[in-house]
Amino acid sequence: MASVEVVTIGTEILLGHLVDTNSVHISRALADHGVDVYAKHSVGDNTERLAIMLEDALGRADGVITTGGLGPTVDDLTKDAVATAVGDTLQLHEPSLRALEERFVKFNRPMTENNKRQAILPSRAVVMPNPNGTAPGFIALRPDGKFIACMPGVPREMKPMLADQLIPWLVERFTLKSAIYTKTLHTIGIGESELDRRVEDLFRSLENPKIAMLAHGGRVDVKVMAKAESQAAADAMIAPVAQQLRERIGAGYYGDDDTTPGGAIVAELVRRGKTLGVAESVTGGGVSDSIVEVAGASRAFLGGIVAYDNSVKQSLLGVRTETLTQFGAVSEETAIEMARGARATLKVDFALATTGIAGPDGGSAEKPVGLVWFALVDDDGIVTTHRATFPGQRMDVRDRAAMTALSLIWRRLEP
Image (tube, rainbow, N blue to C red; front, side, top):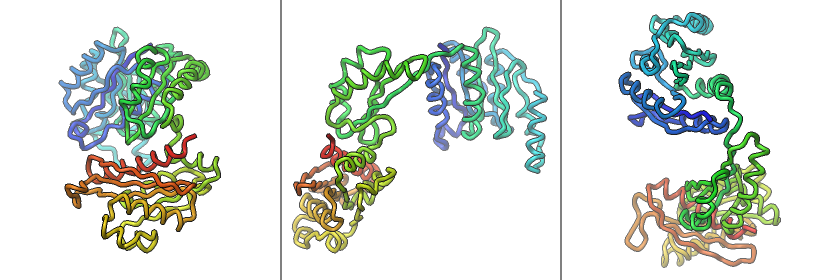
């Protein structure tokens, strides 16, 4: 089993001016082909610091994979640091220079002198041509067999180079046969600590396959990962564990892998032959959007009303003036009338309403920023309400409220 560390290079990454998505993509691709990623790092455009990091990483892993710093400008210093780390010298690579010249001719652009620097590479390197850009990639080899693979930082150049050249090289060099296969079980409306309680013994006892949890956006995923030589072999290992997890999780599990909360809701409504509509204030269409992104949602989702102003709550949803006067727009009573109004106006079986204070202003001691009321009317006309206070900025409150709304719908529908 090969092991690597991933290094993304660029001062702009350290300053937060550029979000590093390369290391995420690389790590996933490596895991899919059975390569262990020991660690990920980011370093600025500094030859000495980069060389030290590369040498340290080679002390722990079989190789290092880097992105960035291969351009023609003075701050593109990756090759100098790599040559130092592997004990090599830099020299002009004539085929890369010719490819550069041909590319500039093709696009009818003059090639400046500094562009030639991109064709100066470590002398022992395996060169990876770049048909999508000007900077070639390369794999620098240390005498003991360890390597540093360098690719451009531009994702549209890096991704095909990784898939078409670096991954095949790794597979051949390390005779990679096993890969890591993953199945993800999705839950909603269950806290991470509660889910951990339900599956803790499996987490501690299993090794292959093993499980991990990831909390994000009001949901918690349970990943089942198996190392195997084929998808079929992995599926045979994962299936019984996944089934045991579904039984442990119980209420709140809504699907696997690419299934979304909206997708699970639509599928269950269609199965039952029922329809849904929503009335949104604080979420401003976020609940509807999560549902209509599902292909075929129109079979069950009839529509939504964004009733942000009180006048719209009254005219379209039938919220009474006395309710707004006595209890306010952000109240259980208003949420109930919004949901009932949506059910009547849209002529649906289920209707859900949201109303709240997203902030940053408008809160009080009694009704703080982040307060959201939910109301769900089911196909029997029974009303369920829920109150929550969400932390964070305005967008955080709105996103969390939309996910909670989906959770309430699913928990009412789940088989």
